[in-house]
Length: 103
Image 1 (cartoon, helix red, strand yellow):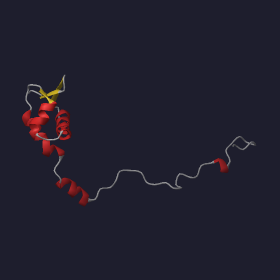
Image 2 (image 1 turned 90 degrees about the vertical axis):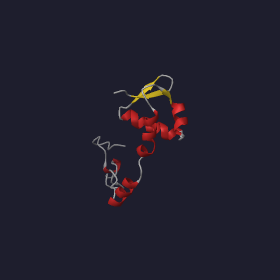
Image 3 (image 1 turned 30 degrees about the vertical axis):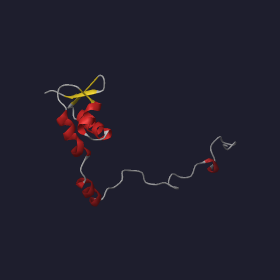
Image 4 (image 1 turned 45 degrees about the horizontal axis):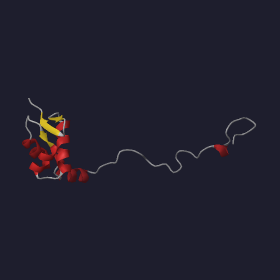
């Protein structure tokens, strides 16, 4: 409902000020203690990355076979494969097969 006299919103038509009920939005501040705890935890890369890379070579290997050879769970192997791919070391082939980048 606008003021009929001027065609402008009245004070009653206005929304409350942005400060009313506002909360700060931004990155969470991490304490030094939290950083130290995070640094002490072994990374996902430490756990499976090396063993997966060691089983791969230039010949394509089925991902299912790789999981069997690693004797790990599928999620950990997929995480390691993703890390290798992001590092530019993994080649994906048709038929759910993977190999290491030559060179």
